[in-house]
Amino acid sequence: MKFLTEYLTFQVKKRREFVNITSDVSKLVLKSKIKEGLCLVNAMHITASVFINDDESGLHHDYEKWLEELAPHAPINQYKHNDTGEDNADAHLKRQIMGREVVVAITNGQLDFGPWEQIFYGEFDGKRSKRVLVKIIGE
Image (tube, rainbow, N blue to C red; front, side):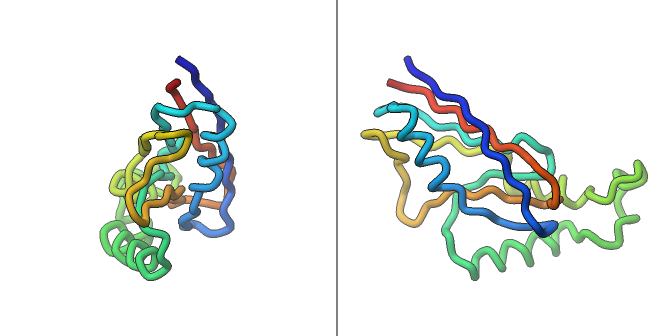
């Protein structure tokens, strides 16, 4: 069994943003030289997410709108968590909805996706550096 562990670092310019990280992860699969296995991609922060979906701007707009309706950022005093001096309770809730990690099969040395699938980093409390773990295991 072989493995590769790498960390990707992101610092987005806005509070909320979706970043397509498929090519970054694909490069790591090639680097690993693993032909058959699994690739875990995991957000290492509790206000960020990793998820799989279509890379379509209308869908990303819909996510933004939907998430803000479910857990609006303001007013910040609506959340008990923000009584600690934070202003990011909504980011924690949005991350919970969008998920912490994804696992993608590796077949013939490549990520094995369904049609239109891409890997995204979702940021909900941005403007600071955050990490994503990529762990690849297999043969």
